[in-house]
Figure 1 (cartoon, rainbow, N blue to C red):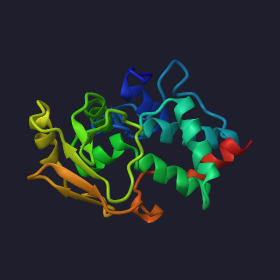
Figure 2: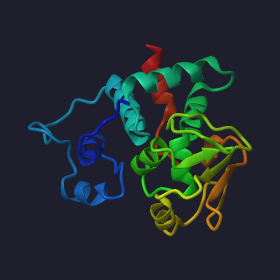
Figure 3: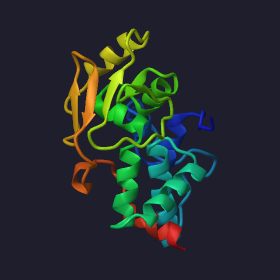
Length: 200
């Protein structure tokens, strides 16, 4: 399974956005891109804005380029607004839903928990992080999972759950009530710039 295994702080500095909870303190200390020329003046262009927005979104959801592009192409084939379709598909990935439900402290952790088979979708084992959940799907923690203490610790950090999800922390299960609307997705991205980037 291909995935980025390098430092997340470097990616956060590159995008100028805290991609993880820990990254913010490093960004405060060094608020410029990494590398020898990080403090140099960057010539802004329309293409650069589109590229940075695409890279930021891709890194936010922990995806590599090939997988992200395939997701965009699927979103483009669906009826409706391509950018909103793309964000909806990214939000309804199993690893993201596990994170949004509060069963993992970070998206990286949720990806690993899913990959190691700690979750069930409608009673069936699913260990593919990119699996697309659907409305009325029920996500449960595997009976007797040795990751249960980690999952319970993560639920204690949750302030609120997305309005399109329902979580029961006592029983450690969650339900997808509906597909999210654009107004219910709080990811700080401008999807129109991504559409423009891939439309070239």
